[in-house]
Image (cartoon, rainbow, N blue to C red; front, side, top):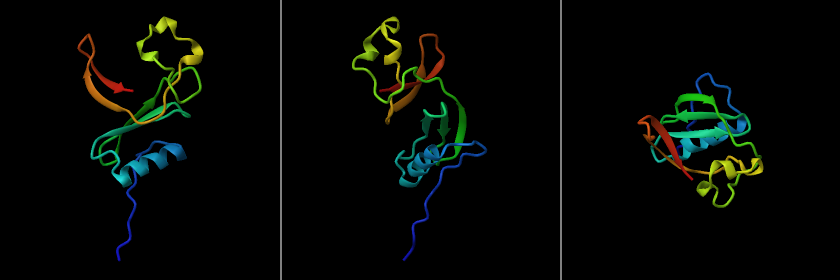
Length: 115
């Protein structure tokens, strides 16, 4: 009987947290990304890791996150003007989100995240 050899993400020379390593390895081993590139935002270390579909690191960078601590967005926050959002409402939500490359109003390529 063959034993399952767990697939692992390749972080190259990055120094990832244990939680980030655990999630990336799980995505790659379970094929949860369904053969698509994926990224992980480490909210504790304020860092984003972008992976090829096979789990090889494509790049990493510092991330600008919400001012407030928390994992949930305030109901209706996406419909409000930025000037009306209070500091305690400025969270970076946790979870799985679908993203796609597209262009902004100035024609610059952007990664849009649908939450």
